[in-house]
Image 1 (cartoon, helix red, strand yellow):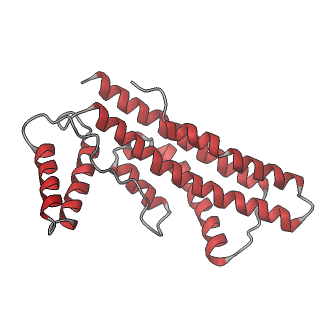
Image 2 (tube, helix red, strand yellow; image 1 turned 90 degrees about the vertical axis):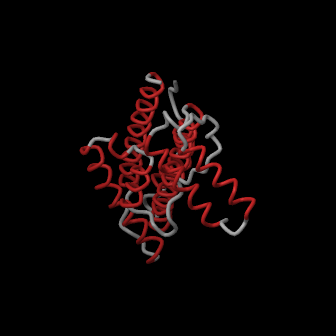
Image 3 (cartoon, helix red, strand yellow; image 1 turned 120 degrees about the vertical axis):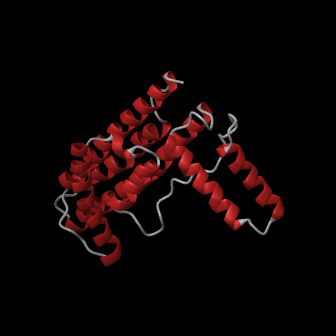
Amino acid sequence: MIDSFEATTDFTDAIVEIEMLIDYAKENTNTFSKYALFNKSSIILLCTKFETFLENFLQEYAYINLKTFDNKTLDTHIYEHILKNQIERLKLDFTNKENRDIHLENVINLCGSHTFQDIQNFNINSKFNYGKHGQKEIEKLLREFGLNTELSTEIKSRFFNNFNALNAIRNNIIHEDATPSLTHQDVEFHLNEIKTFIFELNDKAMSKYNSAYLNV
């Protein structure tokens, strides 16, 4: 049984930096260059910390499941994820007999008819694809780890509507070197929306894991 994820706690600690930037913006509302700088920096930092959270959270969620369950009781999505990664490693090391044999043995143990418990060291990949930061990439990651359907349609719809707007601002700042008409209230709004989504994801993942744990 678990009652929280470290990744969620770490995010809560990390956003102190964003809250500091918001405070600096509030103190410089009469100086446009400083006000804009603090708001732009807050948006970039918020997007970065959210992506870091999601990668760490999914990694932690999968690892906790791998430590708890065996190949016969493991969540289907995580099972498919580590099997896919193992096959990809096998392809990469196919000409290296020593590594190839290790990967083959892992696949056999994972897919075999016998119960295999030593799966906690199987490879997990929760990283964003390079250059992709939008809704489709987030949904892909959540789906791969079996958490996309745990969130209600209403929650996802609200989050992605706001996240897409946030991501558009981020891209405008990074790729166009633009200075959007941001206010510190805008930053606070997006920060609160991200926090709401993260806490909801934390609770749903925790509930799913604990339910599986009690049914083993």
